[in-house]
Length: 445
Ligand SMILES: Cc1cc2nc3c(=O)[nH]c(=O)nc-3n(C[C@H](O)[C@H](O)[C@H](O)COP(=O)(O)OP(=O)(O)OC[C@H]3O[C@@H](n4cnc5c(N)ncnc54)[C@H](O)[C@@H]3O)c2cc1C
Image (cartoon, rainbow, N blue to C red):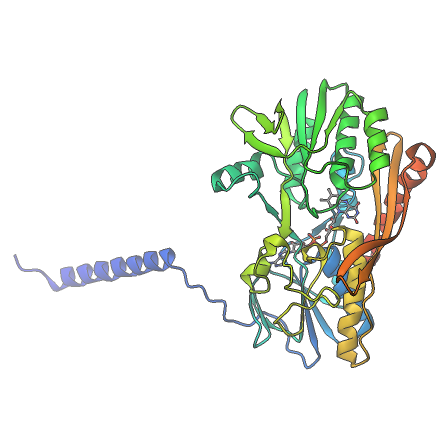
């Protein structure tokens, strides 16, 4: 049968449409990874300092670099749209403080301190050309700071990714802000009774006192609400790692029926289906749990080639006195991602940020770079909310040139919560408000 011209056109049209569709489909299955474009930021002749990570470290560095080198252009690259504080979050878990107190505005910080907040994720680094690749384009830098915080390391418990994902989803640690904290809060507020397991990892984990503080606050919540349950705190360490006297006396005297503290109790196995945890000598059934695994320097440091093994906290990959990454010019690594044994605390990260910013500013201003200065750790931990009572520690650090090791120096503590607990309790808010002000400026500006 002869085919008409009209039919030929119709068929060819169909063929064109089909091939266009096939082409589309093809491009869907193999999307182009074009990261080779400039970030939408104005060009500048000024020295440019790029800071990756708007946590306690990065915010302090962004602000203080502008303070000490006002002519520098500073860009804060942060993947989140808003800041949520981990410090004081244990009180939010039991509705003692409002979320509003913990949340802060990156745009406000940038306006107040005259830098640029660039919402994007850092994904790559060209060390030679001094270009940071982000999810929203490339940024050329003169100085680059990586302050990306921590990632969890579940490998002591499991190498099975599916099992690790169950732990992350069903029993999150709540030591990186965001959804983990919301899940944990709902677990606590909806707890009906039984064992609520929490854990303390070994090593230099994020915020040494926070798991003990959290155990106290949750035990108090069970006690106040007459919930027939208790916190079982399984500690990998053989003793409470910090403020031992204060926490131990709170455990014994305030929460004896609601909190069982078990040192030297690393977990050997977690049976999620039957809800049983096995340690070397014991097994514990649980109704609910929050498993805090080991921590490591954020994985992005390995991905961009700044660390060979951020899991072992990058020993040897950074100059511990200047925070410079080895083998990458003008690149610094700070905050909880650093390998030095300083306390992984917001206060430490903030005070260290001031030192690193001064160091960068001195290079920009071509003035003499000062010798190493220690960061400081000031830390209040709540042991109860009604009445509000807290314990406290302050420490500096020393450096031994011969052994190349850091140590605690000049430690002060106030752990007698019967005597000083209320004063320390009030100071939690004063401390946090001062630090938020330091990082963001006036909340109403
Ligand atoms: C429950 C709890 C209670 C605590 N209590 C206290 C306390 O009372 N006092 C105290 O001093 N400290 C406390 N801390 C510890 C404190 O929160 C941390 O030590 C502090 O957050 C470390 O600061 P950082 O800047 O190194 O990391 P973070 O604050 O984690 O900031 C890292 C930032 O980098 C961003 N980032 C990561 N990767 C990328 C990327 N590729 N691109 C762009 N952005 C990226 C992240 O989004 C994040 O905003 C507590 C922590 C917890 C969890």
